[in-house]
Image (cartoon, rainbow, N blue to C red; front, side, top):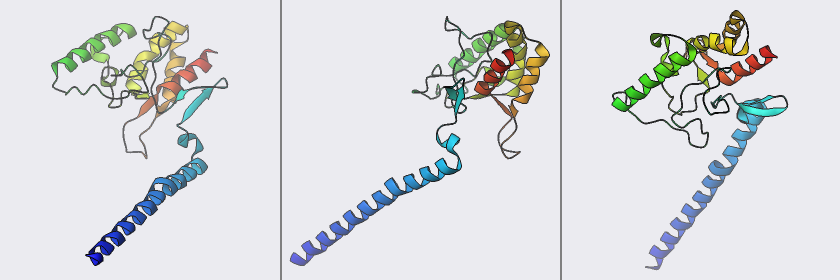
Length: 201
């Protein structure tokens, strides 16, 4: 009996030591090491890819945000992001969880298509898919080049700018596929709007 108790005590002590060592290694030392390497090699990305303009933080290239007017509707003078299931609340990201076959989702998409077409003064078939569908996170910072080009004339008109100049700005902000073959070309809305602000003076 005493031998069994001693064996159990030794196993329990060994298990506790293993737990403490592994907790220290994987819960403290490894995260500190990875964070240190990230801060040294990629400080901007490690801090969340925060963008500053005029001496203050205006957002992140990784998290989408709304560009609304004072009434809470989309502002005509800014490029607009994809729709968000959570109204671009960075504390509550997520998708609508509606299936592709959902009648409710189809109704939402068609309503958005009508709104985007009317807002930009284009026919409904010209509206690209990312203008009417939210991403999985609901906080997508990027839009397709097609959606950015579709908005260029509306933005130029709202700001009194030359349309060709705004279209050229869009072209300069198109990012290619990662490593030349991963994903699709995209346009970061925050960076595009900051470029627009600089263009507008």
